[in-house]
Amino acid sequence: MSDIRTSAGTTSTATDRATANGAAANGDPGNDQGTPSARALRLPLTRGRVALVPLYVPLCIAAFFFVLPFLWMLSGAFKDASEIAAYPPRLLPGNLDGRNFSASAAGVSLWRYFGNSLFVAVVSTIGTLVCSSMAAFAFAHLRSRARRPLFATLLATMMLPPFITLIPSYAIYQELGWLDSYLPLTVPSFLGVGCAFYIFLLRQFFLGIPKELFEAARIDGAGRLRQFVAIALPLSRPALITVGLFQFVASWNDFFGPLIFLTDASKFTLPVAVNFFQSLYAADYGRLLAVSCVTVAPVILLFLIAQKFFVQGIATTGGKT
Image 1 (cartoon, one colour):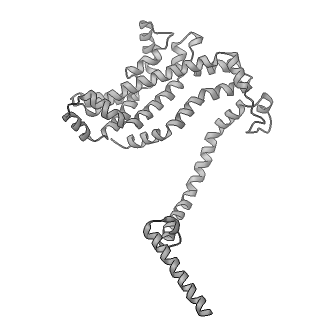
Image 2: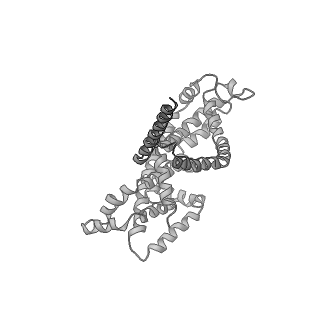
Image 3: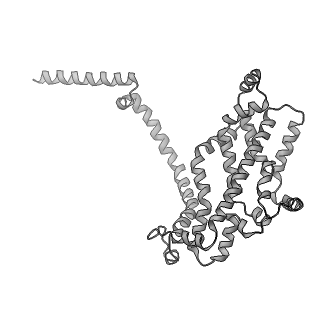
């Protein structure tokens, strides 16, 4: 009887080994976890994850302190005045109450300011993308003796603080009759004003596109404009999205431009309106926090949608010279 059990056990063990070896040969990881090679592979992975713990812990703590003000703003927008002033403070509201949002929208033209900001940011972003991409393509692929000096001059403009050009710009817009309109906030983006960094970023990306593609298109009879539209732009989608996201956030958060160039209160954008709300609802923190949430919501939503392309665009342009 014992001989039979020993024989059966030997047969079973041999079968298991054969099954495991067959699974390993077929590349089935689910049945390969018990083999010595799989255990040897898992061991460095486990050690690598454990070694990253001292790095992740301080990063998580730092991230918490960065996110805490936003969480406090978001929770305060749904609290009443007593909950906001409660001590000790509570992060989560007792019950979700949206009256602060409705009261803010009813008291003043919140959605009008939201629409004004959206219009200025979208038009400015479109202008920046059109002008920056064309200039970057010219600096990357057009051959001219003036290309290098012009590009160096363009990079030098990045050293100038934007407030230096504020007074000359105001004088020019006054002569053109553009004051108290959206033209000073949108037209300069179509002319490349303040787009030096975007041009540099896109130029680096265009230089990474294989030249053979443009040479093949040239043999087929495609001109520079067609090469730009049919080859460069479709391949540069991550970089274009990155530039668009940068410009949209910069235009959306711009405070001094609308404050100086606009005088009609109905044309104000949200950053100026938030300052107006701050004086109007100085003691009503619930409304102020609700308006602040409305202000940052489009930027956060846009970043979440374009996060993949944003990271890809930064990764593929930042390391090239």
